[in-house]
Image 1 (tube, helix red, strand yellow):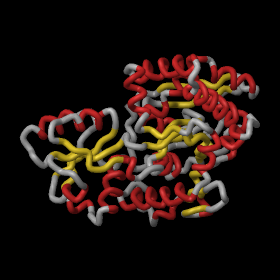
Image 2: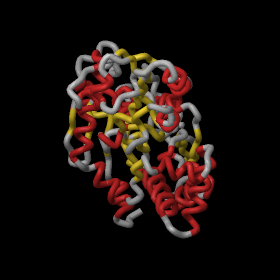
Image 3: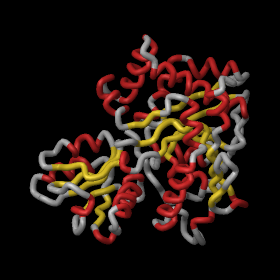
Image 4: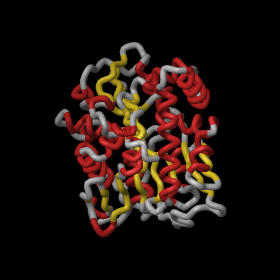
Length: 352
């Protein structure tokens, strides 16, 4: 399960930033989540080795890190050349921490994987006055604020109860048996668990804000072109296998489901609430679209307002975020997060 945590930026000593390990070898970190399980297949199938060789690289090691937040912290500290993360975490951890990073591949966005569940309620407005179990300062928190804003409400209309992801589902289940107004905001597979409680209703989920919770492969902006091409090529070869109706699809899904700790049927169920960009042209167009700019404006506002830019940050303009058309929001002199469609477009054009 992916922990999509938004943390206050740590003061990281950026070691070996953007540099290869000895011998032209590179390390990419990934963690468990439906949209990132393809990296297990890429490593196990030999696809990564093939593309590394094609681009003249000695080695590209795909490393599973079970602690999602730690994987991003290690990337920020220079222990990895790339790492999977959400658009929000890319801003609030490496970018705000001073690491110039680029979104190399937009893999998917949450399309129902994150949601708000309430006992005996049918709408967001029914949440008024309730206690809400939530992992604060996370994508769940962002989802809740967006839901409230879209319904003319504020966080002060509820009482947030910070709860770890390890406990949140079991606590909600226990409370739901005696509290007719129990409520929770969480993500899959925990969301599936709490939705199954008798009397519980899903009142809002990420499909209501499509394209805002984005799952990406992020690399150091100054990483060699050969590495960027190898990673992008390997990803879209896996996407082709995954979406094929031939034997390749079955094998790919079996590897991913096993990696995720479930059955193929369970993995397919999770894919239904994950908008995968199987085609590179679609991913490139999404990265270059106006919606991403609007989303990042929401994200940086939420992050600054909740203290995720760190103590003493003067404004949400502290860090610049660049887009494929050359536009920048925030400080143009301090661009640290870049949405780059270059290599996705190369894949779409058959130029990898």
